[in-house]
Length: 359
Image 1 (tube, rainbow, N blue to C red):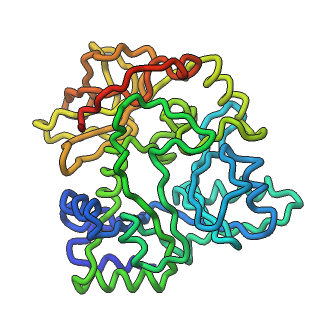
Image 2: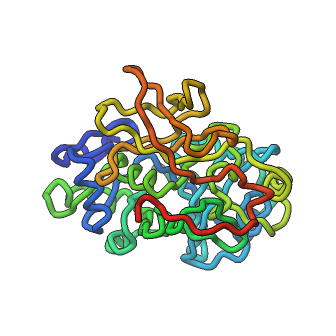
């Protein structure tokens, strides 16, 4: 099916939907102001029905969701036996159906795994990605769409049972106002028609992703490389309940948090804005010419310029001179700590508040 947003003037669309509509920086400003909504073609939708759906999810994922109330939003992780992130899902329940917003390119694999884990429980799973789409924006902008379900991003609030490693005060995502609406195809087409007539301001996923990177917000499709631990990207904050019952990977989560340190940690990078070259995800981060990690997400922010998230060695010295490899040479970068080197068993040690460069 041809995406109806291709008819919107300025639309640049790929296999995952609209990338941008001619001006990613303007689209970011419109999103922040609540005047635009973002078309998130890289999101997929799964649904769960049946009386056992929430207690079952609670038993196999990192988050406590057995008592999730209608319209309450949270997020969860699916971990492998060693505690590495395999999948992430935004979750909201409407009282009869549980809606999961997931990475579209991983939705089939997640559905297959969930189906295998269902056994004889009263749970019905369905891939709703062919009948529903996801639209993002401020809570007020999303409410105007009358969606079938709305997920409100809890980031960066530390959820009950969670733990925040980022030392920044205030957190750069503290004022993040973000929600994602699940709409049916009729609503999706109506929104595209309104945008084509100039009656609705819209943004592509580049704009939404730039706001995410600026808020230090991890995503499975970017920050989970097959060996990522939740601790490394500060995901204990919103996606892990440290006091809930047993689930796959829980032993590693508890050991690293209480007794050890994650081997890597997420940092934020401000890239040299004088260079037109923007590194690709996977680009190597260097300290004094030696590889210390890699870029996971990169964007051009409408206020901060070129920014990125990177996973680096835990032992990287704070304040080290960093550069990032590109096809045209190295780009200078300055770092800000997201997950500190002492994250883990010393995380409970009180530290003085630290001012963010964004204050």
